[in-house]
Length: 159
Length: 373
Image (cartoon, rainbow over all chains, first blue to last red; front, top):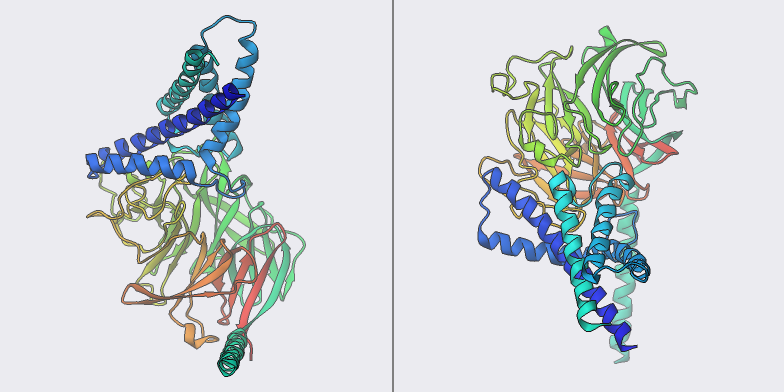
C-alpha cells in the first residue's frame, strides 16, 4: 500500500517535472526569438517568464471546446499513465534498466503529444515550442528526462 | 428594527422597479427583424441595394437575398474554397464603381494546386451578371502558403483613392513571420483594384520586402473599415487569450505582434512579456479577456442618430456587439448590445441606416436592427 502511494507520488512529481521542462522550453524558445528582434530580454525577464509559464501552463485550463481542466498536466498525465502502464508490462519480459525504460516511455508520450495535437487542431501546434523540428526534439528530450527521473526513483526505492 | 426592515424592503422594491423600467426603455430603442435564416455559416455581407443583399457562406456559396427572400440557388462561377478549420469563403466587397463595372471581390482560403497539404488566402474579383460571377481573376494570393487552416484575416475595404486593403492573418503557427516583411503573414495588404501594386506603398523599394504590404505586426484581423470621410482606417484583430485589439492602421507602421501583446498563449504560456516598445504601435483599445472580434462597421446612418460616428464590433465570445465611441483617435466609451443572439459573425451598416448582423451557426441568420418606433 505504501509503495503504491510512493509510486503515485513519483508519478505526480514526474508530471510536474515534465510540465516544468515543457514550460521552460516554451519560455526559452519565445525569449530567443524576442532577443532576435531586439527586445530587451534581461535575466529578470527570463526568471519571471520561466516562473510565469510554469505556473500558468500547469494551472491554465484548456481552451474551448475542450473540458476546463489544466491543459498541459492533464494531457501529460493521460499519456504517462498509458505509456508507463505499457512499460510496466513490458518490463516483466524484457530486462532493461527502469530509468531507461520509463525515459523512453515518457519520451514516446511527448512524441504523441507534439505530433498528434496538430492533427486534432487543424494543423495548429498548441505548444508554441513544438513548431520547429528542434523544438519537437527538445520537448521529446524533456519527456525522456521526466521518465528517467521516474524510473530511477523506482529503482532506488525498489518499489 | 421592524421599521428599518420595511424601509430596506421598500428601497429594494423601488430600485428593482427602476432597473426594470430602465432595462425596458433600453430594449425599446431597437428591435430585430430576421431577414434570412438557414444560411450555412454566413460570413461576408454586401448590399447591392437595401433589399438586395449578397452573403458569403463559409461553406463556399455566395447567396443572394432579394426583397427579404433567400434565393434557393447560389450564384454560379464562384471559385472553390477550402472549408476547413477557420477557412472557407469569407470576405466580400463591392467595387466603389460597382454600379457601372459590376465588379465584386471575394476572399477565401484555397488548397494549393500543387500541394494538397498546404493552402493560402486568395482574393479574386469577378463581374456579377445576373446570378453568375464571370471574368473571375486573381487579385491577390498570400505567400507563402501555410499548413494550418487558421487565421486568414480575409476582410477587405476600399480606400478613398480606389485602392483595396486586404487583411492577411498570421496563420496561427507562423506568428513570428508577422514581424518580417518578406511574407504576407500578419499583414494589411494594399493593391490597386486590378491587383497591381500601388507605387506609393511603403515597402515597394525595400529590398526583400513584399511590395503589397501596407502595415505589419498583426495577428488575425477580421475587421477593417474606414470612417465616413475615408481619412481613418480602423482594424481589429483577435488576440490569443486576451489581447484582442482595435487599431488605427497607418501606412508602413508595425503593430507589434507577437513581440508585444496584451494576451497570453492558449497553453497559458507568455507569448511575450512585453506590452509596448518604441517603433511599435499601441492599440486604441484592447480586450482582456477576449471578445473574439469578428466584424466591424463604421456607423454613419440616420436611423440611430445617437450612434452616428461610432464603431460597431461583432463579438463571437460571449456573443454580442460592442458599440465603441471614438474621440480624437481614442476609444472613449464602449457599450455591449444585442447580447441575446449568440455568436455574431459580422455586423454591417445597411444603406437605409439599419444595422445587419450575421449569426455564426450552420443555420445562421441575417438580422436587421431597426429603431423600435
